[in-house]
Length: 219
Image (tube, rainbow, N blue to C red; front, side, top):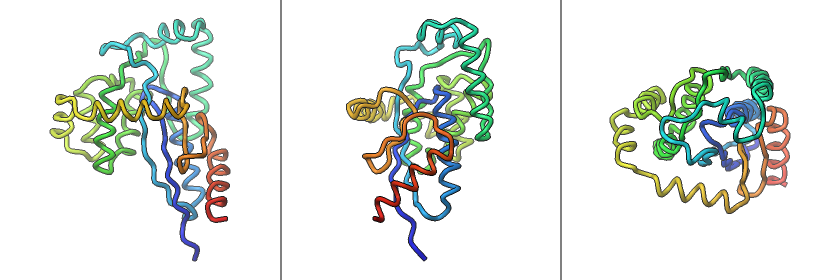
């Protein structure tokens, strides 16, 4: 039996990026389709779409209208597209009128800590679900502590991380690294440090790309 091909996957994303939720779900489905042919070592890398946002956040519709120069109808049309694509990969996207967009730096610090504990994917999925499905405030430290617990992490330790400012330098360093490598939009999936799969692609696109990359490694 052929041993699985090891692939390092850096998934660069933000907690408040809807296409990142779609992309992560698609990536995981693609890896399931590949069965035991690849052994994926997934690392979540930080990217802040809106680093200047205050803690209380902003109305999401107004934020998108201002940021992209579009009107309410265009915002809702874009959401409808995302909602459909998310549903196709089993993710419930419920953003709409009244939704807010938040600062995600604390969430990224907590994700950095979670990776050290081997629970980063569980926490990432909990964060995405809390924000896009349940409309929760992912800048709230109370929410973050609760989600850490749901992801199998120690709540008191999570609170200590958040209150101490731990891992801020590490997150900033990783953000700079991937910006220097040319990442300007997310999600960005980087395989073995050289192959870029941009955007929230469907599972079959991830599957084909990963299969080709694994083939080139073995070739």
